[in-house]
Length: 402
Ligand code: SAH
Ligand code: SF4
Image 1 (cartoon, protein in one colour):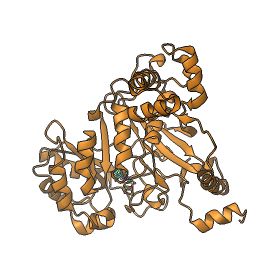
Image 2 (tube, rainbow, N blue to C red):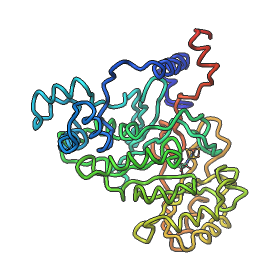
Image 3 (cartoon, helix red, strand yellow):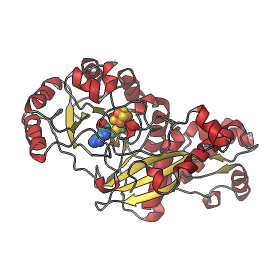
Image 4 (cartoon, rainbow, N blue to C red):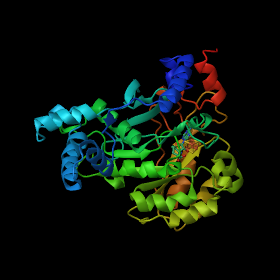
């Protein structure tokens, strides 16, 4: 079980520390000619890489990039030799300079309900989790991480107990999708059945603190000549980074989800501490102004049900009042426990009573069935062992001290 942090089951913590120290030394002295990984690159980055490697003129580079793009993102090719519409000598030159690689799947767990949780290694000491949930959306949804850990400390969230290691790059976000597509045999060679239709940024991290990379990743994932997941099937969840909400909508046209969880500021200040900076009224204004919002593009409000904390009838009524004028649907999430969590999940009857009030006011308010609870893959249970090391700890590890 990945309980208490993914890596511990397969990598002793001491090793993880060693790896972290190695990461810093790699950063200090990169190899002379590292083979660049093309998988995960945006179209522009791919074109630029070709221009630089082969001194191609921009028109030729664009044409070549279009060919390679289709092989990488439509067919899922991992080998230049497969690219049969590219001349043999060019394929060989590509293979000398580049690779097409995925993050390493360090651990894969399959829940009794079919949910799959992956621990992916982005580099030494940098592990993230992502979760595939079947039968969500048109076929299945992949919940991806945007950061290693999270700087915010929502008190009910396991990821929040893990210090931020760093933002993921766009390529690392796309890499999660590609690694899972490999595992699901989701490329054209694997047959017609579509298993992955939706992407949700609800894994580790706060996507709006890493907006540029999230937006570039969405450009790659939604490109019709490649992975081709429509922007309307990509949802970005935020704890409420108000100033970044409009830029998110403008840059990505993605669907928006808000982790609301409380209907008054004093309680939300505790549960979702970013509320102290951007209180509920400012958050709701930003929702009303979200680009493209309307009845066909509703905002999802996530509301975790915490026993005796935020689950009263009065709070359900207040929720309805708060959402007036916002095209919304509400996801009631039974709290997913994790070791040491200071909360309990509301009893089922309480969740249903709460849902009833919201429903009667005309809002869809499905109770989200917890998925993958047995492997700690459910919302808010993700946590990896990648923790930010203080400089002194890294020095100690390098010196071989215990
Ligand atoms: N940082 C972003 C996205 C990741 S969290 C955000 O907070 O929106 C994805 C969702 O899981 C959020 O709605 C979060 O509040 C919820 N969540 C976190 N911990 C949970 C838990 N223990 N049980 C149920 N939902 C949880
Ligand atoms: Fe971070 Fe989201 Fe968890 Fe809050 S709920 S700690 S913002 S991942």
